[in-house]
Structure formats: C-alpha cells, structure tokens
Image (cartoon, rainbow, N blue to C red):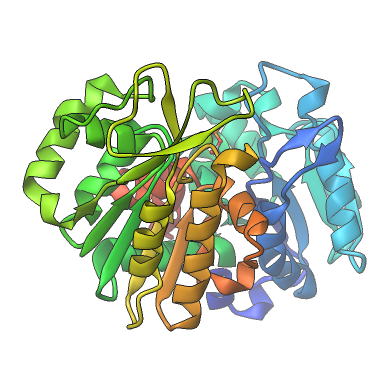
Length: 398
Ligand code: 3PG
Ligand code: MG
C-alpha cells in the first residue's frame, strides 16, 4: 500500500522542507506553454503542503536535453505556476543541486515554493548517480512523488534520491493514477471495453496482453488497425504496417478474435497533406493509405462505447491522424461517445497525452471523464505490470 501525503499527521509537516518530484514535462515552445494539464494536476498536492507550513521544493525534467540548453529551461513554467497560484510565493533557481540551490532553500519562508531548474541538465539524473541523489536528498526533510508519468524511469529524482529519505510519500495525483489504473488492470467493472489506436503496437503489447483476457471488447483504430487488417489478409494499400508485429497480432486474433472489432471502412488519401480524402469500404487501394476510420466504423464503435449499462471503458490512442481536420472525425466521435458513456454511468479512463487535445477538439471537458491519465509511456508500462521504480521507491517506508 502506498502512503499518501494525507496519511501523515499535520504536525509532521509544519516548518519542514519537502522535495516534490513533479512531471512538468509539458510542451514549451519559445517560452510559451501548451497544454498544462500535468501542471494543474499537481496543484492539490502542492497546496496541501503549503497550507501545512511546508517549504515546497519542486523538481522536474523537461524534454530530453543534452546538458544545459536554454530552450529546455523550466523558468517559463515557474512563471505559469506563479500565475495559477496567486496566493503563493513561487521562486525559481537556475540549477537543481549545489550551493546556489542550498542558498535559495534557506531563503524560503513557510508556505513558499521553489522550482528547481531542469533535472536533466545534469546527466547524473538519468544515470541515477549516487552522489547526485545525495545532493538532491540533502535539500529536504520529506520526499513526495507526484509524477506518475515519470515513475517508469529509474532516475535519481524518482528512485535513488527518494530511497534516501525516511519519509517518502505519494502525492494525490500519483495516488489517483495508481487507484484508477489498478482498477482496470485487476478488477475492471464489467462489461469492460478497450479502445486502442495510435501508431506503435510495440508500446501497447504488454498492456494488451494483460487487459485482453479481462476485456469484453477491443475496438481497434488508428494506424495499429492496419496491421490487424493485414494479418487478416485485407489489402491495406500504403497504410502504415508494423511488419514485426504481424505474428503477435495474428496470435491475438486467433485467441481473442471474437471480441476484437476492426474498422470496416476508412478515410484514405494518396498523401496526408494534399487536402483531398475519400472513404472506402473494405480493401484500401494501392497508392493510397488509411488515415482515419470511416463513418460506418464510427457508428459501430460509438454504439459500443456509449452502450447503456454500467461498465468500464479505457481508451488509448487516437483513431486517426486527428491533427489534420480531414482525419479527425473518428477520434472526435470516440471522444464524444466517451462523454456519453460517462453520463450513462460507466467508468471512463483515457490514457495518453494527445487524447486530451482530441477531447478538447470534440468539446468534451475534463469533467466528463472519470480519469485522464497524465502518463503515456508510464500508463502502458503500469498496465503491462512492468517495474515502476518511482512507485517502488515509495513502497517500503522505514
Ligand atoms: C513523458 O512525457 O513520457 C514523461 O515525462 C517521461 O519523459 P521521458 O519519456 O523523456 O522519460
Ligand atoms: Mg515518454
């Protein structure tokens, strides 16, 4: 069982410094922040600690920089945090360990927040290097992990440093992620419908191996559907095929064929950006590729997802190339059916960052889904039953 921050008595918090591993790895282009869902989801944890008189030290990575690169700085995120937390004093420091950080920590008053610079500016972070872990751990009295989406990484900030604290706790967001994803991994409320799209089959195999035996239906869309169709001997034209995984798909179809639904019509084009697309049923002609599910498939899938009766629906990966308007219909309609399923009482879960964007395009709000995971890779690893070092590090408190 994970110990959550609310499990520790308030008296343990007052005046303490708390190192909180957050995942502020959001899209930042020319200092302007895109979707800030991951930032917003950590606010309950940060506020819980500031209200109890803690000095809150936030640590995160951003992107995959090689050494110090100014365009990967977290300073725009400190400004955003300050805007969305007007009652708190938010400071930023240009490094994540060392003397200047120690000095900044000393200057914090109770209830202040300090955001450290990108952890990955120091290569020791990803190497889980012990000296670096010690420096990070020396900054605070208590460790909190609220970065579920980075918990599949065995890095200093998620693992090595965490283990050096006597008190290590889960933040509210991490704990909510674990609760929802454990439900679908172990005991989904039936009937359980899975919707899988996106491009990379390899990333999803582990999760599918675990979930398929429990699922009542798997609706397949996106590029992964073409590999399934190809395995069934249907012509897929120039659509993206993951040749290496045709054997796995063939096996899945032979075991679970009666619960797997594949698209029966497609939106095709000779190139995704020539501004022209058409719909075909069945085979996809040579010289063209599929970029979205067709209307018949949308109708079928929407009816399955929004079906009356309480159950669970888990959706991972878009139904097509939804960034381009011509190919967004499938994904938008699935997002709408997810909202319908929610209103009809099903438990609905969405995993994967790009799906949030699709929801917004569909006019579906975050409040119309039971749980939108902050993790992409982490969610699939968790569902696959893989090791999650960032969670493991919290499990055994001394
Ligand atoms: C993510 O966005 O997947 C997490 O923030 C982890 O980042 P990473 O894949 O670069 O380790
Ligand atoms: Mg990732």
